[in-house]
Length: 289
Image 1 (spheres, helix red, strand yellow):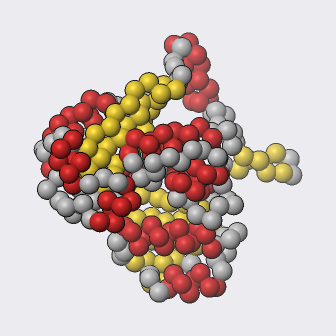
Image 2 (cartoon, rainbow, N blue to C red; image 1 turned 180 degrees about the vertical axis):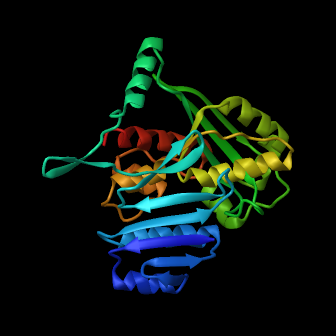
């Protein structure tokens, strides 16, 4: 199930959306689409809504059962202990004008900051994840490569890459895109159970960062289910959503497009570890914005 709400939407885009979803109220669209069509439709909305705003809620395989996407909105989705909440500006009057509370304004935030100063808490480590798969359907397709980067205060601390054996034939278009063949994963790959053990050991309880990170998480969790083990993901951060929020002059938000915007060396795009490196570079650049 997908619910899409748009405001200040160009008429042409509203007509286009009506081809795929039912408009149940002004600017409110409801439908049921597969993940590929949903993602392409969202990209189309972001590319053509101009100065308008868009919010999408769609069902997904996480603890909440759904996820948010926003474009040009004041309300933004944020991760809180593994649960996605909506962060909204809180207006307070100052004479005749209106302003917004800044992070750290509340007493609770100040106490938390002081506590961290007293304990000398270091910058949180995080793990960047990317997977290459036989297709886009996590219920039917399989992971064929996993890439992981562990990031600390001083940069990259550790990295991991492996091919994962599968009985599913790699489609020709995937082989052409990634350069990964059936022979490679059978000869160099490890079993799904071994891959899950290594993934669990590597990520621990760290924050997980990725580009369209829910795609990777769905495949990882399905991989765990197949071998009877739980890959626990406590917190996530989606670099794609940050890029859409911070960069408004791109033709699209593909990984290679955003990497080129920051003049990063693209190299072997669509390989797991190399894509992790790109995500790391993009994330660092976005943090400067």
